[in-house]
Length: 215
Image (cartoon, rainbow, N blue to C red):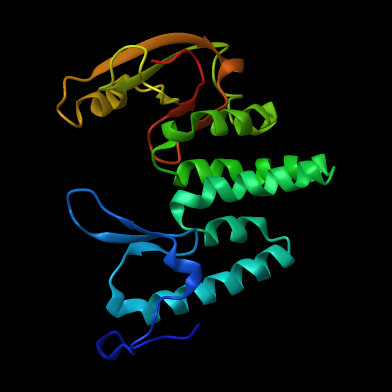
């Protein structure tokens, strides 16, 4: 990959592909580039760097697509856009009539994209559609009892919490309830193992993905 000297940055106009993705931050007054390939604070003095990063990333994304290297394709996108990249691939395979291809993409990538994501509640419906297509054999729930109590810590009012990340660990749920010091609460429900769409301890949180009624 080409590099630029940040202390000797050449002057450049921002390329057209990025111009439409500049947004204004709220009270901070900062500007940002929010593009699937470039997602960062914007400063005109760094246009040459943004341009280079975009072109290099675009080239790598094209190569990954050509090689059907779907994991690389997805994770070359900036974090806020990885779910959308996964959805795009699934849709393309569905429309092409390659259902097995779409299923394999979900099996091989959904877990990693979910664990990496932030603010998942914003796209609750999209996540639910994907998890509904994840075969039970890939949900990692086989060691759980037939019925299990799961917990969720939240500071949202009852019925307003769109989150779907629960835990088997009551103390961890309490930590999430208390982390913003806003009078959070812990909800506990007993569910059937078959209703849990994924169990993972990758983040040390004994996490269960469960799409029940809003907490």
